[in-house]
Image 1 (cartoon, rainbow, N blue to C red):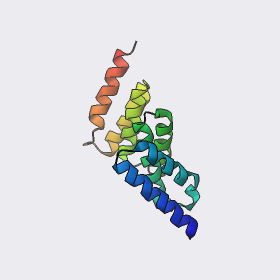
Image 2: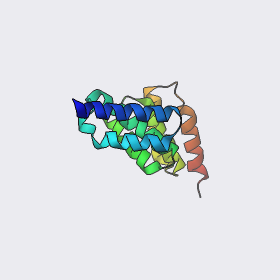
Image 3: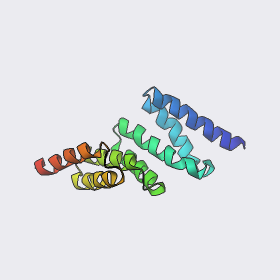
Image 4: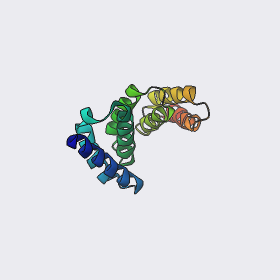
Length: 130
């Protein structure tokens, strides 16, 4: 029980730092939680990976962020925001076709999502790239 409480405490601390937009501190705690992911209840693992993706993306560590969003998507392929966020990061890396694919999936899941705008941005990048 003690190890589980430790992981839950680390996750709570990471969320407090996320709330303060202190992503450097948040990833330190999220990484510790991910290291002990086997202790995290399966229903909570999506949130850990999603938040790690958000935090790393905010720090412009796009490869790490995309990897965590991909792990989150593997746990819940119905979450449009995970596809949207991963697609937005792929567009920032210049991977426009994969960004469009992610935005299309997000739109299929939630046609009212911000993914419509992000897909347009990715299309513009694809057309305008040298």
